[in-house]
Image 1 (cartoon, rainbow, N blue to C red):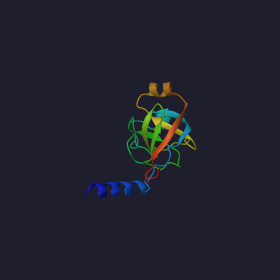
Image 2: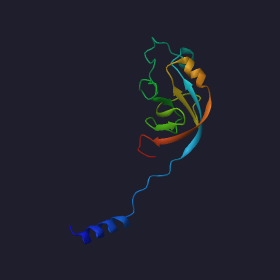
Image 3: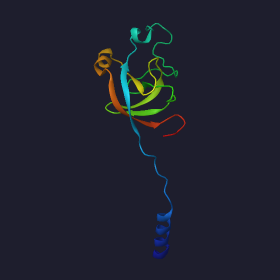
Image 4: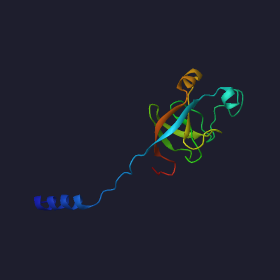
Length: 129
């Protein structure tokens, strides 16, 4: 390849429109925390569905979040101050802009309380952003 053809190639590549990532949208959500406590889930450790989310996955700290039905199972979200989680569960009170983060420790969940936090939808199960 000559210097001339290399320059032409670079100039041609520079004129081809490059795909752009859609802008990242941060929305405010009410975020709470839940545990496997029987008074929260209605299930004891001896129940066959204890620790199983609505999606069929086993709850996992640092992974599981209960999301409203508008966010399909498998949707990844980034929660300000919490980190990335995956929609694996539902909850009767989880509608609209509400999320419920799974935590293993009851005291940690109580301490977390109810917070309004910025949430970014990273990717849903259909691959949309």
